[in-house]
Image (cartoon, rainbow, N blue to C red; front, side, top):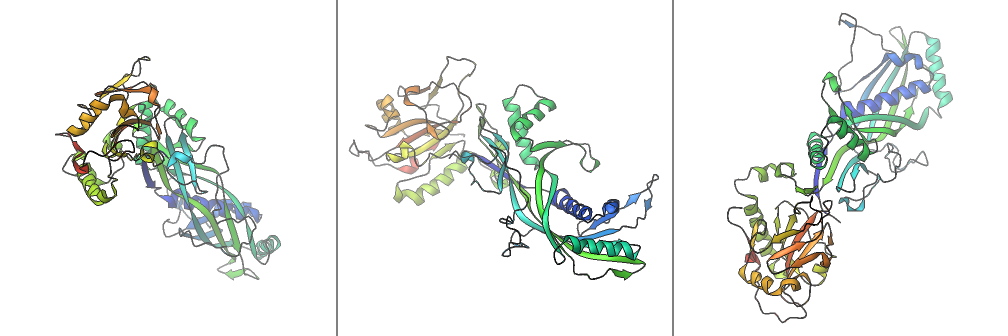
Length: 475
């Protein structure tokens, strides 16, 4: 499984972008189902998060409206607060995640994404060539509304109550309501996505970027250009073909009379899955370019630390090496230090007893030269680090033998994502490693490994893991 950088953020302002729209659509659906469509313009929903809505005239003066449908909204974001858990009133109630996107081929996260494939982990942006994947993570949620339907006359109020009991069973009804909404893609994720696009496409325009988003998102991403009357382009995720489950409960035998009104009271519960987190997986190399450090998702403490990243990595690696010394399995030094990739446990390196001491993400040489090759001096120009003299001696002596796993203490390999590059595409003269691949899509990594006790050689060296490879001065 390829390991990539992962940027995860909570979806902001979910009350106004998700919860309130779901509540409004569910309530309007129920009002329409009761045959009260004439009340659609007189619906008021209030909550602790929402002020009472006001309507103004042409002079922008507030005017009073006699709201006929009033609802008090109480959201609950606790996934375990499942109204129907254990009762399963409807056969297809499922696990409580009532809002689901219709199945679209290829939208479920691919196995290499780094996250488990679940019904709550749906890909909303996916580019196989660039190893990009954005997913939405949904949690089970419930909202309830105390609804009051007001009438000026007893007859329509009585007819509304009759409609409830004629439509529902014992004053209750369970069903599905179609809902749609959009939610803002967190700005840090939107920024990284745009930066990756700029490194992979020659056409730099809003139109070209929009088309790239559409081509890779199956219509799950779009733009909102007038949110809250602010003319700013905001990248949003779309929930267009979703549904929620609702439950209506009414215990009245007759309309409630008071203040020249006849009121029908009912409780409306809506159960749904709410998008609350966006996860973006992306590689450290895009179009054969190492992403800059500002696009790396790491903590503020690491970003502002008063020392170089290789010094930080060396300190961390030293501690880990000390703790793992008895197991002869030290953590390798890395370039760049924030690369999350590790040699797969199923690789021949690990299977034959070699221990990686160094991994580096590689940018290939000039890709415009189709017959060109990449040459790397791993003795003098190893990115970020310098090898110990005795290892250098063995590399110079072993040469191409170091590309294999027999008759050598040191192995030199190149991986394309999680798979070793064919040895026929590599050459090593003891100093220069030559790579004959010209494909920019994969992420290439150089791996140097040691094996103190290979089966075919008698051990001759006492390995000192901590000083096997050290940072270059000034890095």
